[in-house]
Amino acid sequence: MSGVPQKDSKPENNSGLRFHYSREERLKKLRSGYVPQRRRFFSRKTRRGIFILLVDILLVALVFYLLTRPANVYLEKEIGGVNYGLNVTGIKGKKVLIGFTLKNKTARTIQFENPAPVFVQIKKGDSIVLRLKKTIAENTLLLAGESSSLIFLIEENRLPKSALVQLYYNGEDTPLFEKNIRF
Image: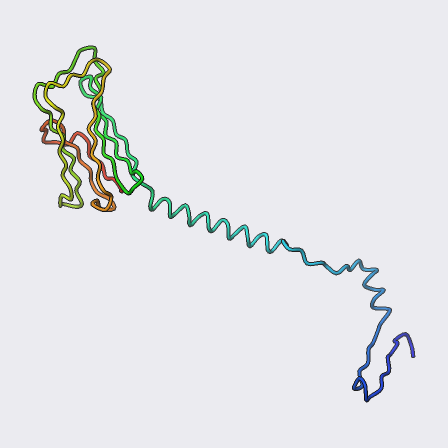
């Protein structure tokens, strides 16, 4: 036989199987640099797939955060030496805090001889969803650099997903602050 060893078998034991071995093919593979690749746990394709999966998860988490993040708005105005501030913040426990602050920036003392009402109105479209009222007590004094605050604490389930928040101060017809806020 010429270079191809054959294994003869008895027909009754191995059912006529023959095994062929080509020495020339084996030597040709060794000369060409063929080395069988051992499969690694993290191949390039696997790493790329895992990287794409992680990026997708991060993008979904970012979108979810942007859709469900709590309200956090701070507005400020200065009129006649008094700094007015409106703070709307979502807090733990599914509540929304609305704070109104007055700060005296003048060198003189500000005295409230009459109660000063503060109204917070939350509107969805043309309908008023919620109207809250508190007052700054009469005979309240604000010395130079002092501030006074009013706080409204509202359950988040009483509010729409987004609404127009208006703050009226001291019986004015036009709102001191007005802003569309997502709760």
